[in-house]
Image 1 (cartoon, rainbow, N blue to C red):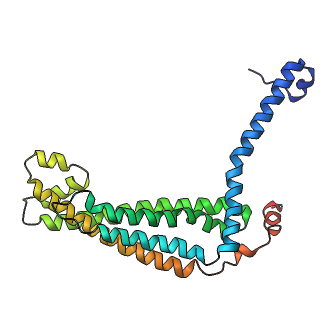
Image 2: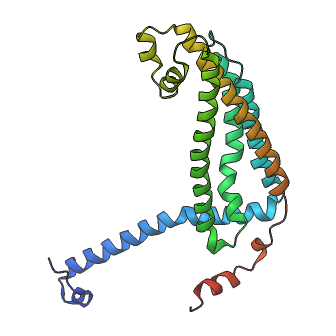
Length: 235
């Protein structure tokens, strides 16, 4: 179906033309509403940069330290442990995430001129996804290694049993005749090692963030007029 050219609006009936203008107006308002949070994030980042200063590093670094401490608190599992054993550590981790996560994007955006805030937010999201990928790989290897060590000499095939446990097949393994107590021991041993490694990395990362994010950032001091001119300059 061929779309009518824009100058046909003047030749359409008044009610049809006013309807088209209303659609355009609504679309414009929707686009403005969608753009508003981004502008708000940019102004919030500028406020953080100018008003908070070194406290940004304390927020991110302190949050990571709390996450690390919470992970270490959870590393006390045994074969009889239940969910309340993890409760205190999960609360500490939740507080740490509340400090660190909301500050990550605003900190990155506060380190660049406002027109480049979207690129900074995208870089943070990319780093976060890479962290998920590497974290799962490293901590998964730690879990599997320690669980297999706990099963060594207690089952004919500790490696195969550990592979099944790490892939979420504990109930199937138990149904096939493996001692449930042995499965619980392997799980507790692997999780304890995982929590310890995660806790140490979290505390180390938090201390590093406190030392580095507190430094003044030169690029953030560029004038707001110079950056758009540079972006819009002809190639």
